[in-house]
Image (tube, rainbow, N blue to C red; front, side, top):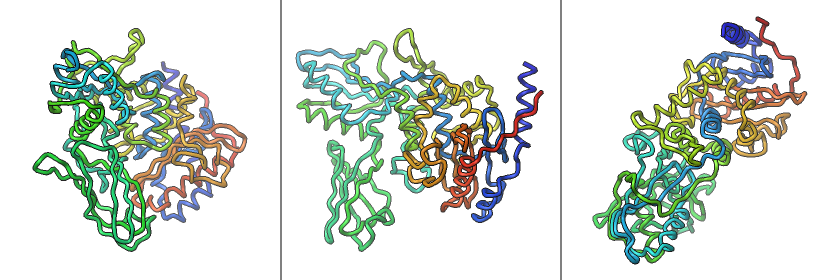
Length: 491
């Protein structure tokens, strides 16, 4: 134990001292962009040796690079066979073509649940002979506590309706999104909405203007969902829209209970079924029996779709799953973790336990939702770099690496680092907020040797490409170099 502590202390000292001066090309770009050196924190490791360290022990806002923490911990804690699951259950009886009793829609952190999947589950009821439901639709979100994390939360930014701002729950279908097709002529705006929802329509207060279609979002204003006296809901678009323009945009404006109930009613009606009850929140009784189910894709596929496009809702779903679902290999399924604490507290503890099991000091580490869409989350380059080293040693290293954007090829890096030695070689997770630009992952150097790379700019002046230019200069420097690293001194 003493030897481990000594090694860790000396390595920390080496990280703090080795190559503290920034490379000249990077320092030059930093000055050109008007960013101070203390806005940048960097750690580049080659094996256990330090290539470059600058403020590597400083807690920084990581933006979406925090998804690397969430996805690697998920792979290791939940395993690659993990799937979320949605169930239709009942305690009622089937009498001829009538279900006499409640129909329970039980959420299980199924990140893939779509309207088509719900329709297929209802079709399974149809195949069992059910045509009429005499009971209520019980919406069971109890897997996560509190069940509705979105209620009462102030908007993160000025676009609460946007997909990237969706706060998930354990029973979320279509991510609660409405896809709106907008097509204008010089005089008229036509609208279509998917999916169709029972007694929900769409309208517009938008004004048609002479403007560039590619900049249509400049005139966009927050839509409203207006509940009418007869119970119908009308979604009303606001702002301006260019003439002779066609665009499709997805919005989150309906309360999710409304969304689920009206989608259920629409799909059941299309199947020829009748439903006389109402939607209520509740919990599936232990003696309820399974009528139909849907499972998500396996965890490696979800991890890939989290990191490549930087999907916040998926990341938040995986993070909360760490606090609510535990592998149960003996049963071949997954068991709900014990109640008592909030799901966030258990998820936070799960991530920290995983970090400590890999001897990663979690001092100063702050995780709020696991996606990086946060003003509170903090991680040091040293913590992130050690996590990336653990990723290389993990049994699920191929799945983890395959989830990361490839420079100049795909994901959030598809338009970046073209024409550099990193193109097609570096695998890096991006992170961007108003005052944050970050990159973390793996960059091969000129000799083809893999380097663990972490760099973050935290500054109110980081936007408009300034922080990005600095980080890409760092990536370019690592990819062009083959310089020997500064090894930690021997104990």
